[in-house]
Length: 158
Image (cartoon, rainbow, N blue to C red; front, top):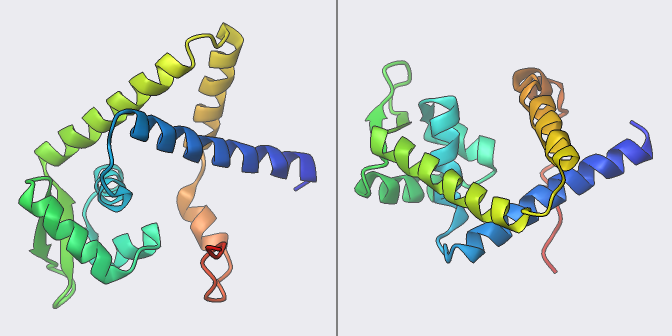
């Protein structure tokens, strides 16, 4: 990939992360992000083993299990034994969890929409085209083509 396209993708990903974080804080939501990510992943991808959620989100399995317990107490997630894997715990989102996830996204979208009130129709067309492009990604093929990591999980905190 050429450097201009790489820089554009990096800027998009960074901007999306910062916008979501800023909107969440503007809403006064000071909850940890891991439970929200777990809920969103289960809502989008369906039931998963704790280990698979941990791998998908790059969160330690004990942290996923702990967050899942809290989500279960809220009625947002159900844990159950996997019928295919002896001793594996599965997680699935409940209808209340799915509703809470949709509500959170709606509130974040509203906060971002307010912040982007002055965006032009052309800007909104670009947002829609970008969303369509990202939605068209073959996530399974992307994961399969990624080389194994060397144990390094990204930038180190300073």
